[in-house]
Image (tube, rainbow, N blue to C red):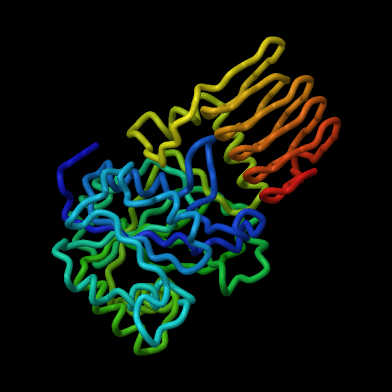
Length: 382
């Protein structure tokens, strides 16, 4: 790991986009959704920060965070188990007379005492619905060079139809940016226009003192959302210099169950797998297990398989997480099978997503479609 200290602390928001994938977040939050056979979504932003020398990282959870606490532990896998700095997890109700917060302003206002006591000059904020291998040091350097009040990372891409059709746009917001000469001139909330846009990654750099001042003022005025209630009004008024930072690396945004399926399947192509993982290592919780065993008569074609699996049947175009068991004569195609799923003998499945510890009984046949994969909830027996 990179041990050189970067003059910034990180804040991660693991709950912001939970409503986009209710099937996967009924018992967990967005940050702990399994991805790419052995990782969780938070691993990518957390590892990217650590790889850039950020060793003081705070996670502000709101609800459904047991699985995340279990995954992160003390932060040892990310070299964040430290006396000073390291990994800090703040649950809701961290202080008396507070409730579960509806937006980032309330979340950060609850830890202003913590922010005031820190030594780092800058704060980097990030959501956790994007799998990426991000260079936060390059982002910070660009922010310092531009002398901006805020720098926001963005990609040039089309807005997915799935997020444009969300049922509750007031709770789930996405943003596009008008940029001129590197400076953000306007921010659009939930735009419906098609075509390639400057699509915000919801990754921001602030000077710590500036962030504290803005949060204090917005909270007193009843503000809830960082982008809507702080950044947009001040961009329009010209009182906040906001610069854009274009990220050209590989990104996987989780915006729907279908999007989750597609983004996992993209990693079966070597060029995408290399683009996401080759730059810097992505760390995750270690589970000591045996190597995967391929039994006599089994076959595996174009698959991503974690350790601890036992394969006796046929697997094609699929993602298998740790401890998955495929019975003799079973045919698994176009599937994402999460940890400890059991597919018994003679089962045939196609376009299926199983959550953890699912059991598909002998002889069953399940077939979804490319546009509508079947989802089986955690611990269910089919």
